Length: 526
Ligand code: NAD
Image 1 (cartoon, helix red, strand yellow):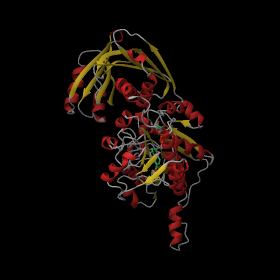
Image 2 (image 1 turned 180 degrees about the vertical axis):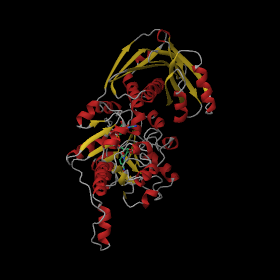
Image 3 (image 1 turned 30 degrees about the vertical axis):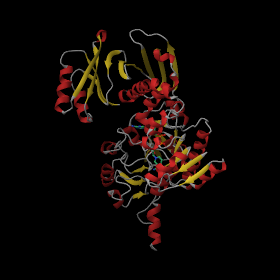
Image 4 (image 1 turned 135 degrees about the vertical axis):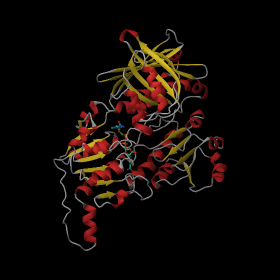
């Protein structure tokens, strides 16, 4: 077996490959032309983020069985081409979580005890602690936003320092909060009002970008310490500077800055801001872990074994892939709708396959549904292969059932999401050459072609509401492509699904929400 390593990985990873009898060529910095000339000799390829693994490459690589991405994001790897050819794509999402959690904690100590400032004074031969009195952590409250892998590591470690831990993460079940002994906060403002140290650990999504902003600082306890070791902009930098001026925020520890890798952020000019240059994953252990993990995964894939971090679905033969492709897309679409329409943490997922789809290998469609369900809140962390494991680790039970026939349709998939106080259902079908239709949401029936941008609204079923929605969208210069209305006559309620040509801003949504008769309105991106 021959593996080409086209970007630098830790030596320990190379050693692992050779120990297992794999012949390894490390050739970083090849021109694309040279690279394409030789890739045909290899069974495996290891890349970081610079090598473009695309159709052109696949066509030159008839022997390729596995692509290993040393790191997280897989934006440089074209997934469908790999899946069609049975090429396994693997990555290493878990390798740096301990390092990131430890840097977060390091920044807590550094900020609360002014370690860099005291260090700098003494290095300049000034023995003076004046104005730099520290704060003990014991007995204080840490507020964690995002209780995922890193957030929960921070929680368990900070408990041993005698701190109270509270967290805001509306997307995980109460059971997980209990497991980590963390007090759940239903509202972010509640967390802000109670914590002495705020630390954010969410991915960067549309919802989390700027999630800590002006309003949140207004609700904060005076003298707050703010730590951001997640992604730049989750804490809005302008609002943070303002909150420091107003003495709401006293200390800041930051590993991720707007404009990075350029050192342009105005935060850099402030004395009580301690910064590191996105060094969360920059430890010998994390880099070794990445190298060893990717090597191990590539070896497993070459041996045809199950690979825990495979990102695509390599086990489907080409023919079956074509049949199931539309269902995967439908499943993912149905899943994606949930967290964009509802905010309740998922406790149970029930999937019913009826008609033609019931005869297929539905377990992979279930994975696609789970991927869709969690993607809006976990981003690239979730993939087809780990979707089940992630659901399980978040305390979500998943059940699947099948019926060979179904009334009115040839094929129908119904997803039921059960949360603490609610049940949500959505059903969809396919027809023709993989056309998708959403045919039911929470008992409202329609025939909706899911499009990239949609507005979903529930309203009292009375004259004038639909017209006003159209007018307001028009004023906001949002073009409506199609509109579907589902009605519940007995309840005199209706649901509108509007396919629109562009993004609808929060402001416009607030306007729409204010229309008399509108009960709820949401913007959905597929
Ligand atoms: P994770 O996916 O395990 O956890 C993220 C958590 O955020 C999930 O539990 C999710 O439910 C929650 N969440 C999503 N949207 C939310 C919202 N609107 N409000 C509250 N909670 C929300 O991710 P992780 O591995 O713990 O990583 C956390 C962050 O750390 C990511 O942004 C990641 O990119 C970053 N990171 C940074 C470094 C670094 O070098 N500084 C290294 C590793 C990871």
